[in-house]
Image 1 (cartoon, rainbow, N blue to C red):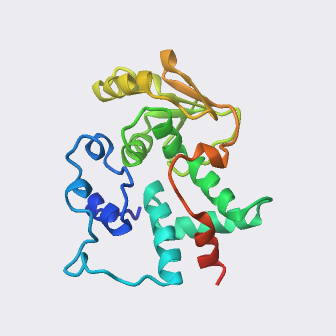
Image 2 (cartoon, helix red, strand yellow):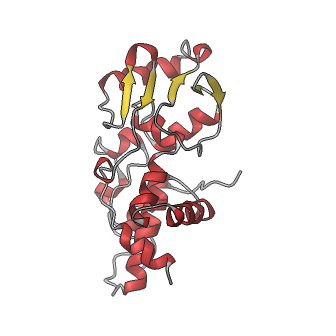
Image 3 (tube, helix red, strand yellow):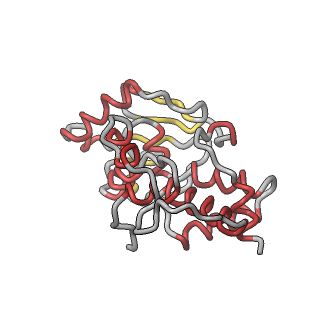
Length: 208
Protein backbone atom coordinates (compact mmCIF):
# COMPACT_ATOMS: atom_id res chain seq x y z
CA UNK A 1 0.00 0.00 0.00
CA UNK A 2 1.46 3.37 -1.04
CA UNK A 3 1.94 5.94 1.70
CA UNK A 4 3.94 9.06 2.46
CA UNK A 5 7.00 8.31 4.60
CA UNK A 6 8.75 11.70 4.62
CA UNK A 7 8.94 14.31 7.42
CA UNK A 8 5.50 15.56 8.45
CA UNK A 9 6.73 18.98 9.54
CA UNK A 10 8.00 19.68 6.02
CA UNK A 11 4.43 19.43 4.76
CA UNK A 12 3.24 22.06 7.25
CA UNK A 13 6.11 24.36 6.30
CA UNK A 14 5.36 23.90 2.60
CA UNK A 15 1.69 24.79 3.06
CA UNK A 16 2.48 27.70 5.37
CA UNK A 17 0.22 26.54 8.22
CA UNK A 18 -0.02 23.88 10.90
CA UNK A 19 -1.77 20.76 9.63
CA UNK A 20 -1.62 19.07 13.06
CA UNK A 21 -0.07 15.91 11.68
CA UNK A 22 1.91 14.92 14.78
CA UNK A 23 -0.67 15.18 17.53
CA UNK A 24 0.51 16.63 20.83
CA UNK A 25 3.87 17.70 19.40
CA UNK A 26 2.06 20.29 17.28
CA UNK A 27 0.74 22.08 20.38
CA UNK A 28 3.39 21.63 23.08
CA UNK A 29 6.01 24.07 21.79
CA UNK A 30 8.18 21.42 20.10
CA UNK A 31 6.61 21.89 16.69
CA UNK A 32 9.17 22.60 13.96
CA UNK A 33 6.73 25.01 12.32
CA UNK A 34 6.87 27.28 15.39
CA UNK A 35 10.63 27.61 15.02
CA UNK A 36 10.92 27.69 11.24
CA UNK A 37 7.76 28.41 9.30
CA UNK A 38 9.37 29.12 5.93
CA UNK A 39 8.96 26.65 3.08
CA UNK A 40 11.60 23.88 3.01
CA UNK A 41 14.51 24.05 0.60
CA UNK A 42 17.37 26.42 -0.18
CA UNK A 43 15.07 29.16 -1.45
CA UNK A 44 12.20 28.54 0.94
CA UNK A 45 12.52 31.91 2.67
CA UNK A 46 12.54 33.88 -0.59
CA UNK A 47 9.44 35.87 -1.47
CA UNK A 48 7.65 34.37 -4.43
CA UNK A 49 4.80 35.67 -6.51
CA UNK A 50 2.04 33.07 -6.44
CA UNK A 51 -0.31 32.97 -9.40
CA UNK A 52 -3.89 31.75 -9.53
CA UNK A 53 -2.85 28.20 -10.40
CA UNK A 54 -0.34 28.18 -7.55
CA UNK A 55 -3.04 29.18 -5.04
CA UNK A 56 -5.35 26.46 -6.31
CA UNK A 57 -2.60 23.83 -6.16
CA UNK A 58 -1.56 24.80 -2.65
CA UNK A 59 -5.16 24.61 -1.41
CA UNK A 60 -5.58 21.15 -2.90
CA UNK A 61 -2.30 19.98 -1.38
CA UNK A 62 -3.25 21.45 2.00
CA UNK A 63 -6.55 19.54 2.08
CA UNK A 64 -4.95 16.33 0.81
CA UNK A 65 -2.21 16.43 3.42
CA UNK A 66 -4.53 17.47 6.25
CA UNK A 67 -6.63 14.34 5.74
CA UNK A 68 -3.65 12.16 4.86
CA UNK A 69 -4.76 10.88 1.47
CA UNK A 70 -2.72 10.31 -1.67
CA UNK A 71 -3.29 12.09 -4.96
CA UNK A 72 -5.25 9.29 -6.62
CA UNK A 73 -7.54 8.92 -3.62
CA UNK A 74 -8.13 12.66 -3.46
CA UNK A 75 -9.04 12.80 -7.14
CA UNK A 76 -11.46 9.92 -6.60
CA UNK A 77 -13.19 11.81 -3.78
CA UNK A 78 -13.46 14.86 -6.00
CA UNK A 79 -15.11 12.83 -8.76
CA UNK A 80 -17.56 11.41 -6.21
CA UNK A 81 -18.32 14.91 -4.88
CA UNK A 82 -18.93 16.21 -8.40
CA UNK A 83 -21.67 13.63 -8.98
CA UNK A 84 -23.47 14.39 -5.70
CA UNK A 85 -26.23 16.97 -5.24
CA UNK A 86 -25.11 20.25 -3.71
CA UNK A 87 -21.87 22.22 -3.79
CA UNK A 88 -18.94 20.16 -5.06
CA UNK A 89 -16.34 21.71 -2.73
CA UNK A 90 -18.50 21.16 0.35
CA UNK A 91 -19.31 17.61 -0.77
CA UNK A 92 -15.57 16.91 -1.10
CA UNK A 93 -14.77 18.02 2.45
CA UNK A 94 -17.72 16.08 3.86
CA UNK A 95 -16.57 12.89 2.10
CA UNK A 96 -13.11 13.33 3.61
CA UNK A 97 -14.63 13.89 7.07
CA UNK A 98 -16.58 10.64 6.74
CA UNK A 99 -13.45 8.49 6.38
CA UNK A 100 -13.16 5.95 9.19
CA UNK A 101 -9.66 7.08 10.21
CA UNK A 102 -10.91 10.65 10.53
CA UNK A 103 -13.85 9.49 12.68
CA UNK A 104 -11.49 7.62 15.03
CA UNK A 105 -9.46 10.83 15.32
CA UNK A 106 -12.55 13.00 15.84
CA UNK A 107 -13.93 10.73 18.57
CA UNK A 108 -10.72 11.33 20.53
CA UNK A 109 -9.19 7.85 20.25
CA UNK A 110 -6.05 9.05 18.45
CA UNK A 111 -3.75 12.06 18.74
CA UNK A 112 -3.52 12.45 14.96
CA UNK A 113 -5.10 11.07 11.80
CA UNK A 114 -1.89 9.17 11.08
CA UNK A 115 -2.17 7.40 14.43
CA UNK A 116 -5.88 6.77 13.80
CA UNK A 117 -5.05 5.21 10.45
CA UNK A 118 -2.53 2.87 12.10
CA UNK A 119 -5.04 1.80 14.73
CA UNK A 120 -7.63 1.00 12.05
CA UNK A 121 -5.09 -0.88 9.93
CA UNK A 122 -4.20 -3.00 12.96
CA UNK A 123 -7.90 -3.88 13.35
CA UNK A 124 -8.43 -2.34 16.79
CA UNK A 125 -11.93 -1.12 15.83
CA UNK A 126 -15.26 -2.54 14.79
CA UNK A 127 -17.89 -1.00 12.54
CA UNK A 128 -21.42 -2.03 13.49
CA UNK A 129 -19.99 -4.96 15.44
CA UNK A 130 -17.77 -6.27 12.63
CA UNK A 131 -13.98 -6.08 12.64
CA UNK A 132 -12.67 -3.53 10.15
CA UNK A 133 -9.19 -2.58 8.95
CA UNK A 134 -9.86 -0.21 6.04
CA UNK A 135 -9.21 3.47 6.98
CA UNK A 136 -10.95 4.82 3.87
CA UNK A 137 -14.40 3.35 4.60
CA UNK A 138 -17.02 6.10 4.55
CA UNK A 139 -19.32 6.08 7.57
CA UNK A 140 -23.00 7.04 7.45
CA UNK A 141 -25.69 7.99 9.99
CA UNK A 142 -26.51 5.07 12.28
CA UNK A 143 -23.04 3.52 12.10
CA UNK A 144 -21.35 2.65 15.40
CA UNK A 145 -17.57 2.64 15.62
CA UNK A 146 -16.10 0.95 18.72
CA UNK A 147 -12.84 -0.36 20.08
CA UNK A 148 -12.68 -4.13 19.61
CA UNK A 149 -13.24 -6.03 22.89
CA UNK A 150 -9.89 -7.82 22.71
CA UNK A 151 -8.10 -4.49 22.21
CA UNK A 152 -9.53 -2.79 25.31
CA UNK A 153 -6.86 -4.37 27.53
CA UNK A 154 -4.05 -3.00 25.39
CA UNK A 155 -1.81 -0.51 27.23
CA UNK A 156 -1.87 1.72 24.14
CA UNK A 157 -5.66 1.70 23.90
CA UNK A 158 -6.04 2.38 27.63
CA UNK A 159 -3.81 5.44 27.30
CA UNK A 160 -5.78 6.70 24.29
CA UNK A 161 -9.07 6.12 26.14
CA UNK A 162 -8.04 8.85 28.57
CA UNK A 163 -7.91 11.26 25.63
CA UNK A 164 -11.38 10.23 24.54
CA UNK A 165 -12.73 11.01 28.02
CA UNK A 166 -11.68 14.66 27.64
CA UNK A 167 -12.29 15.02 23.90
CA UNK A 168 -15.12 17.15 22.53
CA UNK A 169 -16.60 15.25 19.61
CA UNK A 170 -18.24 17.19 16.76
CA UNK A 171 -22.03 17.34 16.90
CA UNK A 172 -22.42 14.73 14.13
CA UNK A 173 -20.83 12.13 16.43
CA UNK A 174 -22.16 10.90 19.77
CA UNK A 175 -19.44 9.51 22.03
CA UNK A 176 -20.03 6.65 24.43
CA UNK A 177 -16.92 6.94 26.61
CA UNK A 178 -17.83 4.02 28.88
CA UNK A 179 -17.86 1.62 25.92
CA UNK A 180 -15.13 3.37 23.90
CA UNK A 181 -17.53 3.85 21.03
CA UNK A 182 -19.13 6.59 18.97
CA UNK A 183 -22.31 6.71 16.92
CA UNK A 184 -22.68 8.67 13.71
CA UNK A 185 -25.88 10.64 14.29
CA UNK A 186 -25.82 12.64 11.02
CA UNK A 187 -23.67 13.53 8.08
CA UNK A 188 -21.12 16.23 8.92
CA UNK A 189 -22.00 19.78 7.82
CA UNK A 190 -19.61 22.35 6.40
CA UNK A 191 -19.61 24.29 9.67
CA UNK A 192 -18.45 21.16 11.53
CA UNK A 193 -15.09 21.32 9.75
CA UNK A 194 -12.98 23.47 12.02
CA UNK A 195 -9.99 23.94 9.70
CA UNK A 196 -9.84 26.80 7.24
CA UNK A 197 -10.21 25.67 3.63
CA UNK A 198 -11.04 27.55 0.46
CA UNK A 199 -12.54 24.55 -1.26
CA UNK A 200 -13.69 26.58 -4.26
CA UNK A 201 -10.02 26.86 -5.29
CA UNK A 202 -9.80 23.06 -5.39
CA UNK A 203 -12.89 22.89 -7.59
CA UNK A 204 -11.40 25.51 -9.92
CA UNK A 205 -8.17 23.50 -10.16
CA UNK A 206 -9.91 20.27 -11.13
CA UNK A 207 -12.35 22.05 -13.45
CA UNK A 208 -9.61 23.15 -15.86
